Image 1 (cartoon, helix red, strand yellow):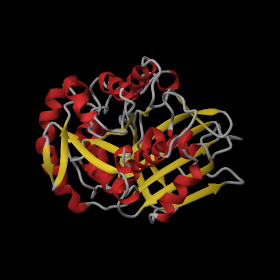
Image 2 (cartoon, rainbow, N blue to C red):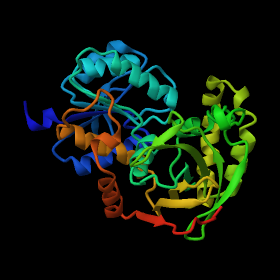
Image 3 (cartoon, helix red, strand yellow):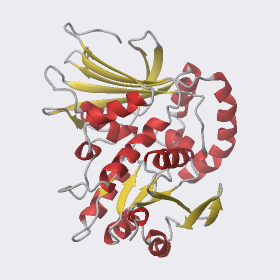
Length: 361
């Protein structure tokens, strides 16, 4: 078997916004690997070969996975049953990675992987900004004095938009956030403003995060709250209004509605910026920051959610040993490696420790 064949990567959803960025990164950083796209349309796309693979047609899996060492599922939104595809990959000796940010979907991937007897490969779900990157970066916090982790993700509205990305953003709006202190609260029903360390003020709404209530630090674990927003407040106000409508909109209807909505969003891009922020703020019992880690993307912010899948691919192709059936990104690499990659790519990574708890809300 040639080295190139032994490092064959199949990217499901290679024609999508994140899929294209991911393929670009893979070809750049794994030049000796064969990168093949997969979709329901086999043949040539952009001058590159594509294999036929229909998520809803398990009979198509076998031929698509032939000779494939690693499959990356980048065909969101992740609102289908991943079990058959995960099982097919692991039984074939093919590593499985996805960019899902939905806890229910990730749980199904884990269950499917656990049901495979004697797998020769592993499944790594959630290889995107959340949960993978957040979990990896939060492992740098020692935990002392921290009682809660607040995660803020600000998106630049000039970034490319697609129907899948828009559907994935809108579907959770208005859904219940969980139990305990969040019992009765719904996603994006309240907006809050946050002043970042560089003086930039952004508005955010609470959003579901694919963690089982807590995130691990270097020592111990703490509850986590996730906030999402855009660089333009009017967009967040629209999402707030949509949070009262989305619970009454079926998924098929929402898919149809995203077509005209994409056209509007593409027009709105002209009014936006490229700048994005990812802030992890470890807070004390009074909600005051104790430690922070912030990633600032002045441009090419969408490469950040694609990066964890790249990192996981490199680690698995390098031959990770003694891995659990469903490793996290934190099992495959160190946080400092991710920070070094982000810095080398031109992103700002800032770490802060407050001798006196700071009140920046």
